[in-house]
Each structure stands twice: as C-alpha cells, then as structure tokens.
Image 1 (spheres, rainbow, N blue to C red):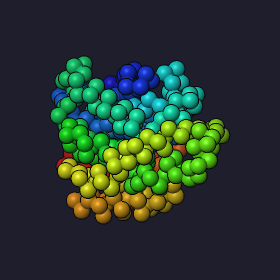
Image 2 (spheres, one colour; image 1 turned 60 degrees about the horizontal axis):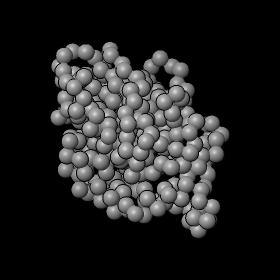
Image 3 (cartoon, helix red, strand yellow; image 1 turned 30 degrees about the vertical axis):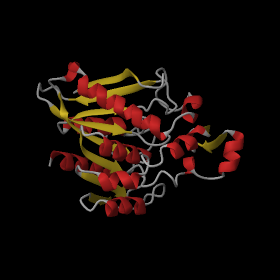
Image 4 (cartoon, rainbow, N blue to C red; image 1 turned 90 degrees about the vertical axis):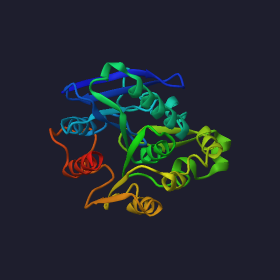
Length: 280
C-alpha cells in the first residue's frame, strides 16, 4: 500500500491544508473517496488512519486532510497548538478548504494512473456531515455523498447560538476540550459569517436539492449528535439511504489515541456500509 502523509496544500486563507492519500498501486484508476473530519477533529484522530487503510485495501483512492483552521499546524498536525486559527475558523472556510482539496485531486497528474478524477465521493463525520452535503449539492464533480453521525442544522449548534449579545461584546467565547482541557476560542466572526451565508449553510436546503446518491449513517447510541438528526436528513431526501449502526456512539467505538491494530467493530461496520454504497 502506498501512503503519502502531510502533503501541504495552500488554501485561500494563508493557512496550509495538510493532506494524506492511501491507495494500492495497481496502475488502474480507482474511485476517489475524500474524508472530512469533524469539530475539534483532525485527520489523524483515533482510528482514522486504520479506516483509511481499510478503504485503500477495498480498492479506493482514499484522501483525508486537516481543515486549514482546525487548530493544527504543519509541525504538529495532531491536537490544537494554534488556537488563534481555531477561533478564526468558520463553515465558509471549511467549504473553501474542501473545494481546494477537490481541485487538487482533480488536477494532480502524479496520480493520473491511480485515481479516477471523474469519480469522487465525499464522506463527512459530525459537523463535516453538513459540509460535505452542502459541497455535494453545489459541486457537480461529486458523484456520491456519505454522512457519518452528521449534523442536520448548523443554526442550532453551540458555535452559532447561545448568548449572542455577550459574545458580540466580548468578541470571543470559549468551549472546553474535554480531552486536552484547552479553552478553545470561537471568535464572533464565526456567527457573522454564518448569518451572512445562512441560505448556503442551510443543510436542509442542500439535502432537498441533492441530485446524487446520498447515504446517512448514524449510531443509535450517539449522545453528541442524536439520531434524530440523521432521521431528519433522511426525511428531507426520500431517495437517501439511512443506515443505523446498533449500539454505536458518535465515533463508532473509536477513541483518541487508538492503540489497537484493528478497527473497532462499529467503525468496521461503517466502512463496509460505505464501500458497498460507493461501489454500487
């Protein structure tokens, strides 16, 4: 298997996008799968590398990356050394970062014999479920879209709601990261960007307009993004496929760091469902 880690892409916001690719060298163009991490996430979180290997072994050209403002750096792509960047992140930047990644994989001649640039699927976990859904509705290069424990509404998220007057006055509000114990900032620009682009950032609108195959995967023991949000998405697109992973939590049994040599059972089930859906 060929694994190329931490290639640096320059995005639109003077922050690097770190990207990984996983594939088996066969000299045959393979379907491309682009995976997007969620809120307080990163491409090397938990079992995501094992998941990438599983997709590559199944015959896909698998791409994952760090959003430019996720709080990681080139030197330290894991965790959140750059809280200033984290605070300046917003949904529009994530959509633009994803566009940069799609452009890169669509034009990169290094992989012309290994990656089928005309067959790109997107997978988004948690918050990125909304990002990949919106991007799939607006970018005709995307052929299939999958959400894993995906959100159904950005307006109701903690990063776009709460005491707006206090947030505006202070210019920043903080969310504690339960694992690292960092006080993670959200600058008020996050809310302003959301309001300015609210129609584009309405996930329900994007789902109702989707013209491509759409898979929604959710665990019924998810206490972070309740399964109701998956059910709502399925309701908005009667052509979507809705798969419930029995007993699964928000990260499908994974955790960080993940020291096992194999995928957790629920995440393995997720990978199988994804592969079957994309191959069909």
